[in-house]
Length: 134
Image (tube, helix red, strand yellow):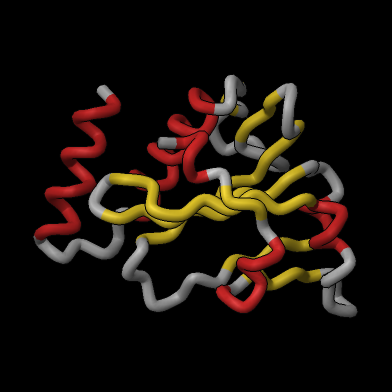
């Protein structure tokens, strides 16, 4: 099934479909859970996407590699229940970038209203785990 999903994402990308976020997001969550020996949270469960013994509760955000916006936003309520945040870029059905951020370090970057914006300027704060996911 994983190969079928990869093929579908590649086909959609080939035909310039840009709104594949939900398909890509769910695909990435399943791959990450499998590769990190974790469990997916219940569908649409608020709080986190995956739980692992190694990383605890993880929120996963995925973007298309060619996306204009690579920015992600976390708020203080969401961060309160997380241990890690994982940023993933997907290109033609393959994970092209995977950065794991420790939530305690991100909390220090929160705006006065409690938001943390993660864009390309902050990617250096994450740890690359691409090899573990491919």
